[in-house]
Length: 236
Image (cartoon, rainbow, N blue to C red; front, side, top):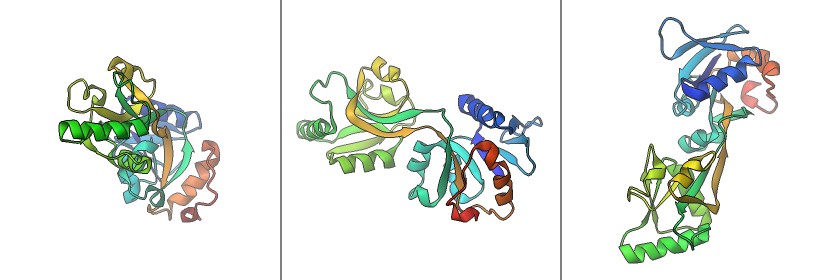
């Protein structure tokens, strides 16, 4: 059974700690293979180290059986995600909110309704739509559509999104935040009803993976990991 976890940084360390505290010791390969590793504590398990953003795609393709990544990434990258992966456990770390934030100087913009009105006024004044910088295009577009916000455009930002307003490449942002400190440092405020999603590191199972042999491995380690496999037809 292949288990994919983030390949570096704090998320990798926290994954190793989470599994290790439950009897499965994860370690990187000593032979220099960057994306390979080992799992001690049960037989038939293989560690695959990937970027957090790759794990949703590897799960959807069935190339790994289990994977740890943020539920924000799964829902953003996989259309109809619930048909492709099944969440098995929230791991209790990597918590962050995906939010909409606007400049603090916009004293009359505190809600999504205010943002909709501001976006319409912005277009009339400037001749183009208000720009919202984000890397979460699917989640943000769906959220704003449900809220009835129009007259905006999403501009792609893969890093330092909070700085796009200061750099005049966007008027608002949609991004992940945990403490809000970076937002405040960039003179941004979160809309009162602008939380799109609460995210954290989550253990997912791939519905399309070949579970012929892996099924028994998962059933073996599930009690130690505190997993309930009830209702997962693809494992029965």
